[in-house]
Image (cartoon, rainbow, N blue to C red; front, side):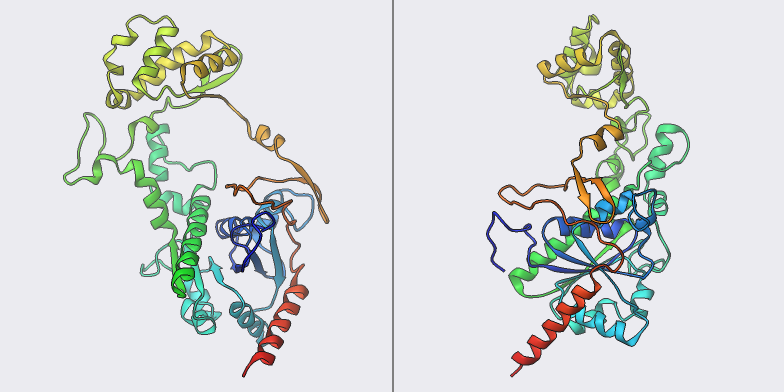
Length: 394
């Protein structure tokens, strides 16, 4: 499909996605696709998805989470256990470029939604499925939510190293990382199809995606064989980010986070604060030394920050080229969001898309739909498509 760059809904305009996902991971992946212009058709049960009731919201079907997670999508509600529902599902698959699912493999097979079955309906389909554990794993059909995946992929381990006890990140870390991996993998498969005409079965096992994510830096010296060991350190784990003192620092009137990343930053900062010998301190000799001495360096920063206001530190750091910022609250972030009107839920704040495509005029996002709001509209399109196909057949 050729579109005018200035009026296209996004780079994925013309791509239709059948969204069979639930909760947050899959819906975040399809939100990214929808924000980038894809026509995402969300197939829901009659009582709607879990994200619709995750926390408070202005409408019984629209939590604060759902208002943004379901934007730019169309919702249809179909009974997949009925013959009519299965017929509609088949028509949907034939008319879509992408099918995305987070159901467990056994449930997909039972509904005729596994890759082999879907491929018989559309040979060039891009089919993305994500579940907790890999399809070739004996755990493939086990239920897995964010908490389970965090514990299974080293997140609880790094929390223990910092706090003394195994814990979880206070955000649905694995769900969101894996959702972004899904979106990227889908667009890569679409690019391949554009070049070759072939579809692709894409799998995102959460444990594999998160293990790869965690080991980027935390594989550390354990990646080599035999492991490369630093004195008094485990082979795994990146010391700088595992320091318990890696956190915002108090100022005379609040908090600031400084990251004097390079040795010359530390020397400049401590000289500015009047600490003698900073330029000659062996802890600042080179980048390797500053990483190895992260604990003491962060503590030294914490000793000097109370001597000035947050604003004074930010002014100094900007002039010295040292990364620094004031500490923003979640409410601060929300307050910066634009307000728009929802036809059923009233005023709400729009979370911005994660990437910007300059030159596109995309306008206000389509509001998150109620459960099944677009069922009639989508079914009418399917009937029209089927009628066109029948009249064009030789």
